[in-house]
View 1 (tube, helix red, strand yellow):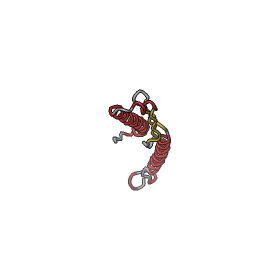
View 2 (cartoon, rainbow, N blue to C red; view 1 turned 135 degrees about the vertical axis):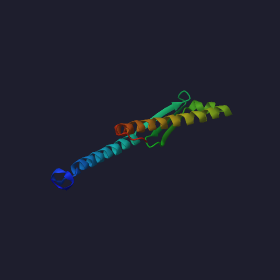
View 3 (spheres, rainbow, N blue to C red; view 1 turned 180 degrees about the vertical axis):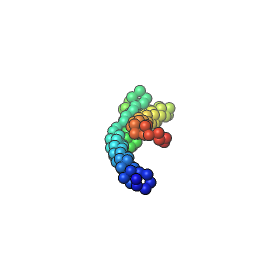
View 4 (tube, rainbow, N blue to C red; view 1 turned 90 degrees about the vertical axis):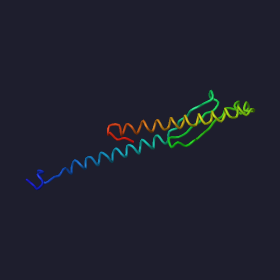
Length: 117
């Protein structure tokens, strides 16, 4: 028997290499998944469809659409405030959808590992 009590003098190196390879594969899959989500578009609307926002998975605002009638009707100060609120609500909802998708995808990778983030 070799020193250290391991048959053939091995100290579990093969198992460690398998773990490293598995971790590398998992990292590559995570990067690919992250890139796919970053390329996706997430949309939301507010104010009864008066305002629509589109963001990407990088949480960047790509498009903001305001219905023409909302601008015409925004003659009164309270109408302008309502329009502003609708813009904020639509953008925030689209951003939340992107974040939820990313969190859901990441939990598929970390869920079984017992990692807390």
